[in-house]
Image (cartoon, rainbow, N blue to C red):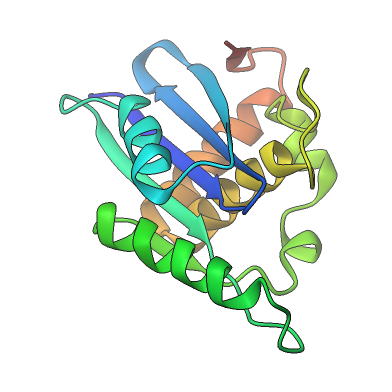
Length: 165
């Protein structure tokens, strides 16, 4: 079975977090790659996200959506960034993050070793990117089954190995 790569992107005007999970199903291993793009345009962010997967992998990309709030002066820029990322990554799904912390609990992120990163960002963008990737997995029937398989194994004496690169 080909490796499966699930990438989450938390766009931001200051920092954009990109976290990619590579599931090596036959080996029961997960490799986590990540990157932070600081004050970069959508094209640079999309290029970095694309570098984290390969044509030989089955790839899924989830982008955290943005809801305009109270006519802030950043609303238009954030909406445009999400739109541009979706144009540059047309197979990606933009997900609403309303209630995400009630669905993707901290314990699940901890089990996957993505509850903290060695780099601080403006708004915890790497954990948010991880959370949006996991939310995307929960919403996709095939990826949901994979996640159940991984979490079930992690809770046994024969867990999947998670390596954060």
